[in-house]
Image (tube, rainbow, N blue to C red):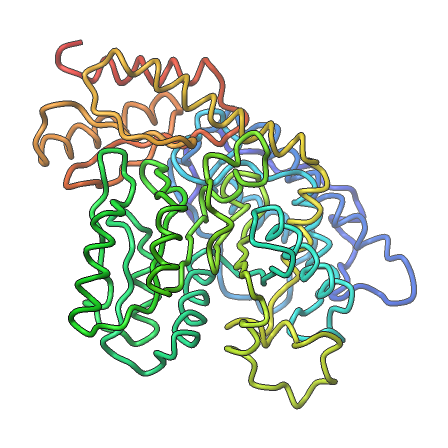
Length: 479
């Protein structure tokens, strides 16, 4: 069995009851089980210890580890289970480290972690109301509240989904039905050239050919060029090509650019085309009065993807598909559930999207937002943007091409390098950063490799930002 290099945590000392007493397979329905309570306390302590030592370990472990995967003849004791967990934890990505700046994966909100545990313990199923009576109502109400906050209107709502890719897929399936294009193979979708890969993936799942995706060029700031979109829509109409939807992006993956949403919405209204906004990265900024102007026009969408997990610290997965007319979900996906009692609402949760059985992921979103409050949400958003501004200021004096936007992402590559030189530079510099426990990602953008910083980690401070700038300065020939 592989052991990770570096500072691995020693197993937490276990109370005698946790180490030796038999662990019940299932919670007892009629009494408090002290062995189970001890096991849960021990697991919680083990997680807290992993958090507490996070700054001593690199964001990226030196080795991935693999415990025994097959069950033994006899099940493990509580102590054995915790040892297995520790091995996996030792080889896990470490989002709490202040140098973790590579991806849209911030540390988890503490309340969201607790809600995740309760969600698992309740084991409710949002397939149908009788399997999750209160939680089904909570999901509908919370989706409606968020949709209203983002400007989609009083009647708006939606459904939770396991990731933004699924939310985007469901949105385009609904759009196709509303446009009367089910089975039409020459239907096309227009999006930014910098749109997330999930758009292409959705069209493939929907059975459309690669030519169905029509990328539109972006401007110098990474925003879709509306004039070009207008030309492309005119050309599609002249060619008799039906347009399934236009997809706008509120927060592109590499530079955090926001497409001109209001202008795109006006164009879609003129052509009577469905507008979907992939706001997986940027839509949460619409929850803050201080930052809603960054995503102005968000509420003009017909459908909207929101991923609170990417910045607000909601534990994975947490994505929402919101619609101006949420009843369109059931009209598209409802098949009837003859093995269930009738829905207390318009449709069961399992009839409002592609997923049938699914956990009550809304619980960790709801409790996390309750913990933050509106002021806490605003603080997280403001701090993330401020860190990006600070890093951008530090790097502005260096001979780098900076690729940014108004959000908390910043990508960069040296000026004057060709594609192969940029690839070598990005590999070597990322390695040097990791040696200093600073983790950035290495995206390929517009034909050249960049390094990218995502500044959503609340533990990242001026010390880490300066250290990144120092490593970058040392990596450049003229410095």
